[in-house]
Image 1: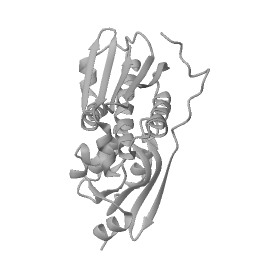
Image 2: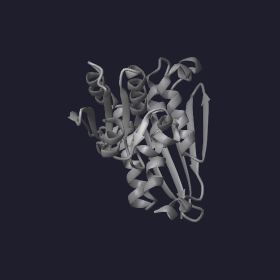
Image 3: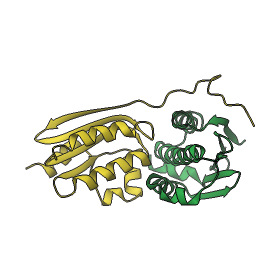
Length: 127
Length: 140
């Protein structure tokens, strides 16, 4: 077996993820950019959990600038959906081969409302 | 001529899994020139297999904390076969207890044409394959 190569040849870093929280037209919007994988999913979880207290009427995870979403990120989204329950409305904004496509393929888009743009989500969810 | 991408003996930790994912995506995109949508599908499926290998490696009884990624693309048939191998001891009860592990396998099955996971005391090998990838490019 070959030797580990992590010291000899550092692999390029793939883990850039930034998360910020905004209020837009009365909705709490968590904007996520970069890659949401097993390493960075806790960042998303922390931001969404912070946004859940107190429970917002409308909470939107905006993945417009997210390039990659793994099962770890999807589990965070499902957990937030479960925690918010009936006390508010939760939606995901995504429209890309690395985000909305896998969300549809595994059926999460049937459980959590999915919109292709933030505008469309806000129009649907805010009066 | 078949194109091969092989990175054996990589430390099975979450950071290396993310880096491997990035290198694999570059290979599909820059070297093979495959469709954007296919690159996204294959990259996510392979990342989920790598994440499973990382989970196996962290379990008690792992014989090695290394994992291997091997991929072969045949331009003549446009078939892609990817194997992810780890050397962690298989513990079925723990494996099924993981919520993310189940979703990862669901994702692999949804994204790849065929998925086979072989486990033994020596480790686990996940084989993901796709056929006739050129048809994916028509939609571009």
